[in-house]
Length: 640
Image (cartoon, rainbow, N blue to C red):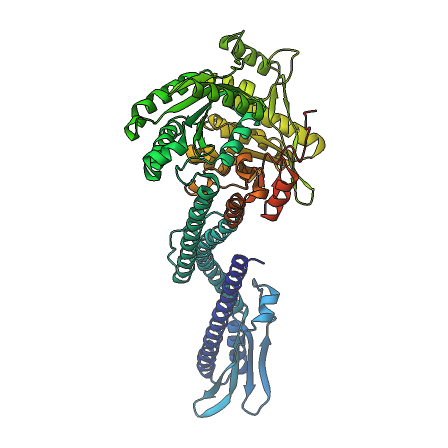
């Protein structure tokens, strides 16, 4: 039984006991008053009757006539006259009066009518004594009516007291529920503070809870700072601050093969010519500043262009990956021109070679790097600050043009030419956590079902992402209803900007409550940074329906998400670039362990995506990862 219910029952019992006790005391006091009144009345009536009898000069008939007349008024239960010699004279006894009070009440509260006795005399001659007993029926009826009035008054007072008590209990209950919800929030990894209530005891409790929340926030911030430090150690080049070779290649590989990646992109390589000679000529300090200047130029692109990332591949080589196609050569030339103006200030012999390659989705990484390296070698052979372009892949919009592709996308949505992929996410025990279900669209009627990298840019331009995501959720709910397997659907950040999107999803999930409890929804890490409030509102509306909400492609900026504990997440999936090569990279393993510790402290599940090697999978289990997905888990996963 809950504490509030116990308090309510205790309050009800106390009020009931007070009501019964007050009523009993009131009835008892009223009865005593009535008995005293009856005793005095009997005594007065006996005295009055004796005085009237004394005036009859001892005539028995007149005395009997007078007593009979008095008795016939029905106010007396008994009138008895006893002569002076002890012989009975007049005696009249009436049955009990017509009671209006219930019999049980009469039995419970008996009223005693004490007889009144007075002496009758004729002058100095004693005639006898008269005894008078009044009827008690009137007393019972009055006692009953008074008890009813008292009960009604006490009931009204009791109801008012109960209402006041109820308000107090509700106020206490609200404060306790807020405290309980605060504790549950801590259990879910959410750090919520409450306003201090008025009650001193609850105020002290809330103050203590708020203090604990503040300390936990401080611990989280410390953990986040530690994770950011580990990230820099594992992923960043110590000298320049851009990504090191391992991390950059992991990012590039993930971008090439991720289903919701970019259909086209670009890769720019830069090589500082004769780094060893520059070290001898300029000195290590000057050369380090020179390398930092090149890295800063690349970081400017990274900061200005979302999805762009840079890295240092080795001592002299740098790389810049572009999120859009058709601009690699232009970017390489602009970057080279900017550095041509800056680098000679370090020394006349400083020079660069630059190559540019257009990137297509799903292109083999080795083939891409080979094309870029060949172009870079040609540029280096052509002299300082030369730019060479590698093989250019076909464009998504080639042939038909953007307008035609957009119309095909509209037609595909209208004809329901959609299906879900199916990639298992498994725990260390091998148990299925859920099926990751990216949406595939048959852009060409009768053609192949294309991955998101082929049609998502068009959906973004046409502002169709919310419609596409709703179709994906609907397909997932239908599939869950058929086979009961949990499924995960990823939502585009652009969909969150639709103010009605979360409401429409709420309606859809409410209509399929059982399937909704097996649905997982996830948004990219970048959405938690750029659209924090929208992600949090999505969780507030949908998590009560049983869905699980998470982040995908996470890890690069996870430690820098402000108030991660307030997002209301259930899990986080680490990006393939973060976990790539974790089995043989101590720094990377330390970074992943730090992320796992951070997530588990927030009661979030930590998962890994894009796992390719068994050694990496085993290392991830050892680091505390809860579930993994990727080619190693499902080498050839295709939609049914």
